[in-house]
Image (cartoon, rainbow, N blue to C red):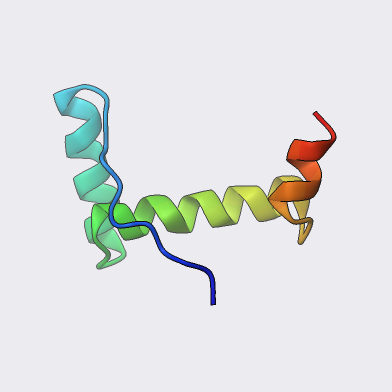
Length: 59
């Protein structure tokens, strides 16, 4: 199982953080869990199941 980093810090304006709180609350997730879910979802849409190492190596 991949190693998990400990936490994500949400940057942006106070309004951005408030919006994040609303969005994460709708799914009953912490802000960090919601951000990770969005990263995974958007990555899959963009790259499917291609490992990030292959994409980084091609840049």
